[in-house]
Image 1 (cartoon, rainbow, N blue to C red):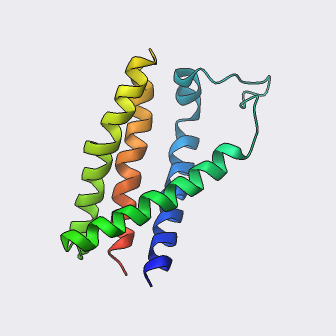
Image 2 (tube, rainbow, N blue to C red):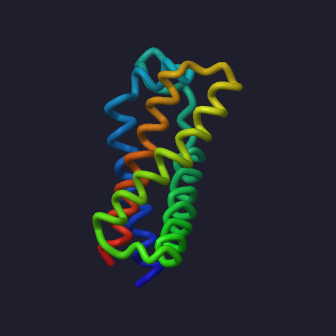
Length: 130
């Protein structure tokens, strides 16, 4: 059941990301400096970033499951709060550092950090459902 819960949590995080970035696509593309075509869609339509994101979600969900097991996080509310904390206090600050040194707009940090925070919260919740 462990592998299945990791895969389902990874899918949930990935799916949330699809909704998050569709809703924030225009401000995200502007803040990230993504080149767009005449249709307003990204000029580069390579599937590679999506494959990388899917793999990353499995890695994050797998490590979260490992941490949850070591910390005896086994209820839905604990999983939600722990996931929220991982996204907000581990991943988002790292995004802020990378964007800060790269001279990227703080709005990009808020969008990407928001995804990390809420995506990890959802993954934590899903991991504790099984």
